[in-house]
Image (cartoon, rainbow, N blue to C red; front, side, top):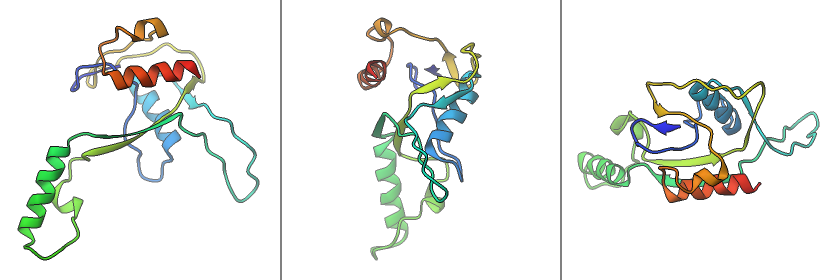
Length: 153
């Protein structure tokens, strides 16, 4: 998808909701953003009655969304609470999101068909690409590397 705010191509994704596992979030976000129902691919063993084995991400990426905003907000929180050491409270100082992401990337398999629909509110484009096309895709080098790695699997 070509992300409307970022202006480059990346895989569908988003935040984990309350009481949702990471692979379930990936499946939900893929459906919401493309209209394609998928399942996260993974080797699953029968775990027995008291546990459940979950699909593992193929990559886990940690990146800053805005380190500058984080540092500014934590500095403001310390200033407003005086010089005494105090716990930084996200809820009272930043209610609109996060500054850093832990991104769990899964290989997704379609459950029924691959015909997609574009969400024009969130994307400026949606398409399928071959491995050869990734080299010239308008995206960041780390995303190109992640996609190339997924193709190798």
